[in-house]
Amino acid sequence: MTPNILTLIQNCQWFPSHFLIISENVFSPLLYYSYFAAAIPVIIIGLLIFLNGRKKLENRLLFLTTISLALWVFCALITWATEFPKYTMFFWALLIILEPLISFFAFYFSFVFFFKRDFSTIQKIIFSLPLLPIIILLPTRFTLLGYDLSNCDRAAIEGVLVSYAYITEIIFAVLIIIIGVIAFRKIKDLISRRQIVLVTIGILFFLLSFNLGNILESFTDNWYIGQYGLFGAPVFMAFLAYMIVKFKTFDIKLIGAQALVWALVILVGMEFLFVNDPINQIMVAVTLVVSGVLGLILIRSVKKEIALRESLEISNKGQENLIHIMNHQIKGFFGVARNIFAELLQSDDYGHMPEESKPLLEKGLESTAAGVNYVQEILRGSSAEKGLLSYDMKPIDIKSVVLSLLSEQKDIIQKKGLSFESKIVDGNYNTIGDAVQLKEAFKNLITNAIKYNDYRDPNCGIKISLMIKNNKIVFSVRDTGVGISEEDKQRLFIAGGMGKNSISLNVEASGFGLAFVKGVAEAHKGIVGYKSNEPQKGTTFYIELPLVKTI
Amino acid sequence: MIENKQSNIFLIILLLAILLSASLTYYRYMIKKNFTYFTDENSIPDKFDINSYK
Image 1: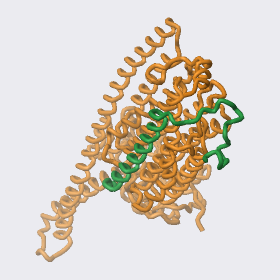
Image 2: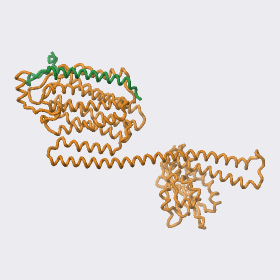
Image 3: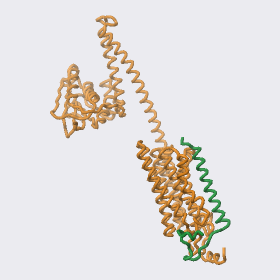
Image 4: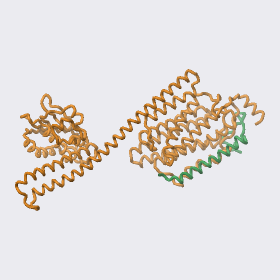
C-alpha cells in the first residue's frame, strides 16, 4: 500500500469492526434486522428439514440452498462492516460465486422435489457447466477489477464475470419455471400439484427478489437496494413451513402452532439488533419471555389434542374394519342358513318335509332372511356414509321407480294394519341416477314409517307422495308415529346412531338405515330431511333430488 | 430412495472446486493483497472494455 493510499484510507475515518460484522460503518442498525430476519428463519427451516431426513437428496439440496444463503448474508455483512480493503475484496468475491450457487441449488432442489429423481450424470454436467467460468475465474480481475477509493463507500469494482453470473441466475430461474410447468402437467395427484405450485412460486419469489436486488445494486451503485431483496427468503420459508404443516412435506411433523411461535420469538428477539434505549430493550425482553412461555403452553396443549384425535381416528378405523369383516362373515353364515331353509321348504331333493315341521322351517327362513337384510343394511349404510358405495348412474324415470316400489310395498303396509295413501303429481321425473340404490333408499323410508308407526292409534297409516317442487323431485313418506325425540334427532343420519327411543320402539334397529339414505341422496346431489307433522301426529321424511335434463 | 452415491460424488466435487477457488481468492486478496486501488473516479475501468483486463 503506497503512502498516498494509506492517507486516503485514514481520511475516510472508518470505524473498526468487531467479530467481522459489527461496526458503526453500517449505515443503519435496521440493516442487521433485515439481514438476520432473512437468514435466521432460513437456517432454522433448512436445519429442521435436513435433520429430519439427512439421507434424502431433496432435503440435502434444500439445506445447501439455505446454507449458501446464510453464507451470503454473512459475507455481505462483512463487506458492510469491515474497514479493511482486503476483507472487502475477498468477501465481495465470495458473494459473486455464492449468488449463482444459490440459484443452482434452488434449481437442483426443485427438479428433485418435483420429479422425485436425481439428475442423470449428463444433466448434472450440463446444468453445472454455467458455474465453471465463475469458479475458475473467481481469483482474477474478471471478477473484481479493483478497490474503489475514489470515495469512502468501501466498495469493490466488479468485473464482467459479475454480469455473466447474473445471466446464469436468470437462466436457472427460467429453468425452474419450465420444470415447474412440466411437473404440474405431468403429475395428476392433487396434493403433489399443490406442492409443486407452492414451491415454484415460493422459490421464484425468493430468487427474483434476491437476484433483482443484487442486479440493481450493481448497475446503480446504490448498495442499499439489495437488502430489500432479502425479504423474499423468509417468504419462501413461510411457503415451506405451510407445506410442512399442511402436507407433512419432507416427512416432518410440525404443527401450525409450533411454526407460529417460532416465527414470533425470532421476530421479537431480533428487535434487540436495532433497539438501543434501555427501557425499550427491557420491554422487548419481557415480550420475548412472555411470548415464549405462552407459546410453549399453547404448543403442548395443541399437541395433546392432536395426539388424542389421531388415536381416536386409529381406533375408529380399527372398529370400522372389524365391523366390515364381521358383517361379511355373519352375512355369509346367515346366507347359507337361509338357503338351507329355502331348499328344505321348496325342494324335494332332501325328502318330503313333514307338514308339522313347515311352520318352523318358514320361521327359520324368515328369521335368517331378516338376519341377512340386517347385516346388509349395516354394510350398505356404512359404505354409503363413507362414499364407498358404487353407483350405476344413467337416465332414469323416478316415477317408474316409485310406482314399482309402491306395488311391492302396498300389501306389506296393509297387512300391518296401516292405512295406505299415495299421490303422484303429474310431471317429468327424468333425472340421472342409480335406480336400484334410489329404490332401496325410498324403501328404507317406507320401512321406517312401518316400524315407527303408532299402532295404538286406530287412524294409523302411511302417506307417500311424489311431486316436483322448486325444480326438485321430492319423494316423501308421512307416518302417524310418535315423532322423533330430541336425543334421536342428534344421531338420525349417523351410521350406527341410535337413541334410546328408537331402540325401545324397534329393538331390531341397526342404526344404519338413514345413513344409507343420506349417502345415496348426497351421491345424487340431493338431500334427505324430515319435519314434524305438528299439530298432527308423526313425522314426514323426504328425499329431494335435482331435476336433470336427459336426452 | 433417490440414488445417493452419484449425487454425493457430484456435490463433493462441486464443493471442493469452489473451496479451491475460494482458497486461491483468499491467497490473492488476503495474503498477497494483490489488487488495484482506484483513487480517481475517472480512472475506474469499464468492465465491458477488454483493455481493462490486460
